[in-house]
Length: 249
Image (cartoon, rainbow, N blue to C red; front, side, top):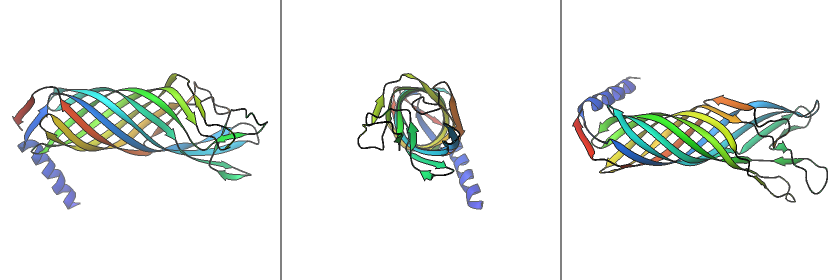
């Protein structure tokens, strides 16, 4: 615990004594990844076909943003991006048949009246986002950056892998609002002239996503949500649109 106090004291001293070179206006490109665990839910198709379903996802995307200083190293951040919203690891439990790693889909197979399942699926989404970031000078040209970002997702295509080799993977082009998320981030950035390079850790705080009528007993208008239950990481590449600001803290 004493080491933690020493580290915190060091950070506070750095933010008050070190010089800062922070561009007031920047553009940022950030590829990022997330690992999420979604809450278990019940899928009821009939009195007999009732399942408990748990899903995990490995998702990724890229974001482009414009950042402008509001005051005292606090920045407003507005951006757009692409995100592959994935549901890639499924566990389905039935009280009689036990566990499986698929979900039933509402798809009529051309080879007869049999059930068709997917082991993983994802939504290609466009998102608009807004957030705030705070820069804390760590030492010459190094900064700790913390932020909060809200994103609104719009899906333009969906992919469902199928378990049967005789059935092609299904791709749909349903266009609709898909979800919303809010996340916290913290990272370290090095400023090299007009270019800044760094890495950050992402903590998903809240996620809400729409259900999908490609699955039985679901409607596009309904939704699910989760708090936390995930972690992410990103690479931050910033480029200054203004002269470097130099001042003593």
